Length: 130
Ligand SMILES: COC(=O)[C@H](Cc1ccco1)c1ccncc1
Image (tube, rainbow, N blue to C red; front, side):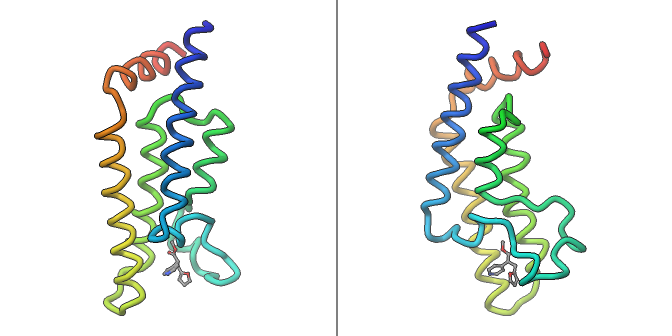
């Protein structure tokens, strides 16, 4: 009903705000757009579920997420993919992995500090009811 749509609107506002703040962080520049398949032709042979911050934003606007947990599954793909595709000991790989770990820690810290567990519980109830 209307109150449910109000909750989901607030969820989208929160998720947009988090995603935009991440996109502004210079450490996460490599995560802002899809990996360029022309630049990295084997990327899709290794990474089955590509994800990036601009795609997260599109998904939010297309009402893909009804809970924060669903959003987290996609947000986690961004750093997980970076660790998987860039495993070597050379400086480039180590640099992107350090930034991937920073992204993981930053998302978790924001949600710990700014997401009310009661709000997420209401979102989960809406999801189960549909
Ligand atoms: C999330 O970004 C990536 O996984 C690409 C992979 C990549 C390899 C070559 C070109 O791009 C990346 C970008 C910047 N620095 C390291 C790796």
